[in-house]
Length: 158
Length: 158
Image (tube, rainbow over all chains, first blue to last red; front, side, top):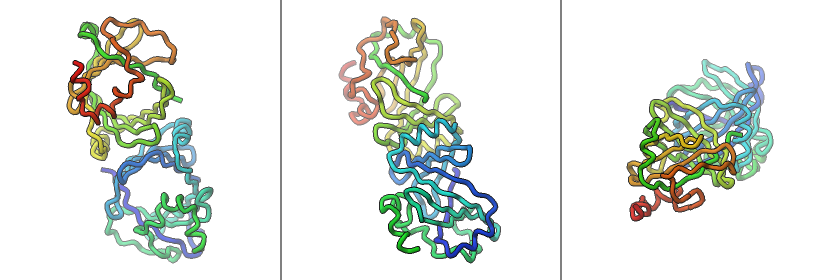
């Protein structure tokens, strides 16, 4: 089963900017929830996907992703009730791992995270100097919570 | 936008059996609902799909269907809360249209329908002698309702 294993950190400073190897704009829409899972539609560059994510198990969850035509993605975005999340994602390799620095726009403007995707839940992570407090398990930093609180939380922190 | 335009009828007798040109077994799982839409996973023959259906507009609704790997379909079926619907679908051409005769198994065993897919909502339908009462707009014959009532309704009718 394809798994997403991911840890999430707050950013400290902007030292990560020197390491950016790729930047893309992403748009993310929550189409449906089921139990603890969800179905998302995502658009990045000139490609789009529909994604099924299963319930979380620690820092892991099943993730199924299928590419779909761009025009159909726009039509599926229009079916989403929740506001879309828009972010600029910078890819920064560090210590053999690939980090994603997400700078949110729109509804979550001002919110910034560093995420690293792993092969195994207990994989050691060489920590970059610009990765601060870990918020992987902090419910306050889940996208849905952030959208509900309209980004007020992190704005007071920054 | 890809649309599904469909009308549904009860069956009268088994005259349709003489016209069957193809038969396949289908398995259908409701993964998630959103507003009046839903996300389904479907398995038929040696292929599988994930399907997004938008809200109904009369007898029409947006329908997006993407083929997915069989092994992943099984894993997505395992994420579905509702019982899967299993049916044998017989394809019967009649009067220039293609009819699907669905004979349900498992949770909806005993339930049989004839469905015809159209190009336009007001398209005239040459009626086959084995198509009886139309139940397109009858909420009692929606899959979700039928599953909830555990097929009791139609069993008493047959």
